[in-house]
Image (cartoon, rainbow over all chains, first blue to last red; front, side, top):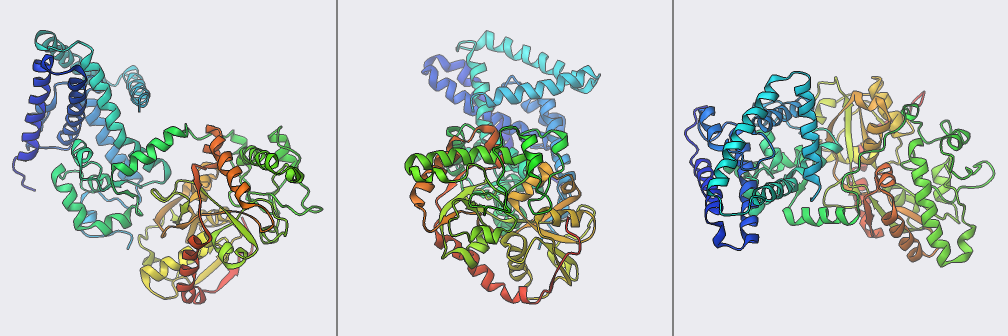
Length: 113
Length: 472
């Protein structure tokens, strides 16, 4: 399937990263609780963006995608481990799931009636 | 939510350290690269950040907590039944934060679809998706929070199922052939003396989900309930201390002085409604969003390639009994709603119990069965044969198995005692019994089961049932 650059994802990634850096740079102007809350939310979003990237978004070039989100803002989980274990999770789940054929299954509803 | 991330991080690291120890270079490399990137990032923070050094750690940890709002559900989904993946129809703040991963089933069906098309993919085929995951959905994260907070209040976040010693792994069905009181006394030293059913009728029992490894927990629950009741009404201290195991459940339910029991929705509406009080319904958490409700899982052999109910035209169906809502009527109603009024199965065998039905499908003596979803959870825990089956689908949800007492007893006091007893269940006992809460159901709630049975009466009449030659 031919895919172009997925602009919403790209814009969100850039925006999210910029905001994180901004909070660190200008945090002293805000109450501390606000900076911490804002960062908590932004880091959650960043982790969701890493999840998008590991499924191959927003560019077709995966190395480019990974560079976009590689900075470990979230500290605890190495992106590569997140990627590998998550992709494994998708695969395992499809193996154990009685109905799930990867990809095409749902377009041609082989679902339980 | 506070310690959750720490626990999962610890597990995550432990697995990875073990992998590196075994010489997994990829894992090692991942961590090395992470360290390098992390050092660069910390250097940047050191140079440019205007915030205290610990802010990043707190925020990163808080982010993991927030993510747990989502993963908590997914995890629970998989713990219960294979292939159950949640849909949270949230379009608000959290949906954005998780980039629509709350439509988790949609993500798993289309793993390559970008986040912003998931809601549309979902709404285009909402019914298909919901059928697929048997309506495992929440309307929004508000509902989830209510449920999750409740879980915290009742301090049972997600207990690890009790480890059953290997000698107990094969369980015995409750029934005349299986009971051996002497054995239970020896297995559970503190179990009070088991009533001799030959001489005394059983007036207190929990006969529906009654497997040997659960009896000690059930007994503790009952002792607690009984104590609360006898505090209110001293005469009731005559009530037997031990839960019995009735040989004939119908005779037991019809005891004029029946004190405490659990019945099935169909027997309740079809024969007991006028002679017993409904206390309420324990919640086993098998139908999300509907505490106290349950459904059946339709199971077939794992090697059976048929995928739809319609493929089972002419197959042999096994059920525990014709009076069972979960084993029989739920399936008949399923046939009616999915395929119309028709004869689907050429053979219908009555096995006597869900566990016997599972064994028959596992051994190839029957093709398909409907099993109470709560029983199914228990059998996966205790009955190795369950591993040879797979779930084809779930039936429509109906009110679950209610607690009852004879008309002569004070239902208010009973209810309070049961609610308090469920509240006080230890983590382990609550996990063993599968009881997660209590639903104050009313007799009218069970009309639904009567309505379904009435509608599918024609389907039932088209099937000829015979008793299995050999049970279990």
